[in-house]
Image (cartoon, rainbow, N blue to C red; front, side, top):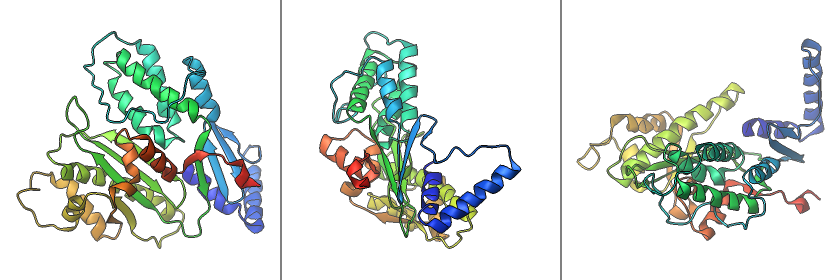
Length: 326
């Protein structure tokens, strides 16, 4: 969805390109039974605002509908969706939460992440307790709704870039799950402005070191990068530079680059070393970045207010600033 909007945004910058788009639409109308409804402004609960060389996508109405559905439209807002350093378990105990309400709430949050990557980790975390939900989990979910109340009009700006280069961020939170000690992987991709692809997911295996967890996260990010690189190729843009993937663990980068095995890394499954082949083929390039610059950190753990707001801005999530349009 975001890639499509970014491409259309590039086409509408000049008058000649706009004429080409209009001609294309006229040809489509002669071959198929269709109607030209004009510039898109609302689609599948997504609100699209198109300005010169920019597109703003949000789900403001849908966010307010969620708050009204769960009677939280007048609640006091919070600055973050989750409490920093708070760990929740499926063995919390206490009264069970209504399964219909809880599942409906989590489903709504997951759909809202289509334009709100800042909610991705919270929605992913809460979805782990579908079968063991209790009032504690429901309370955490309601805190996320309180965060939405204060940021309901937030969305993502996609701005036209002359040299938009595909870049990814990969991170993991080692042994973050208190139930099974599994880690969480997260990634985010950008073409130069707002993020257009992101994910947060608990890893399927228990890792024995932070380096192993980072390797697994980087492998998943590499697979996503290889898939995303097919899109410009389908558009006949074959001269594509290696996709830079930023990782904040030097040991993981070293293992991906150095094929020498040793005692500290031999336990890591061979399939995760496919990163080496992708880098050798010139498809990706792992680059170290500091933890402060690791945008994917927001996909793997609950953060304090200051860091959360900084990374949220780097994701491209913000209000639609009307002053910028004047």
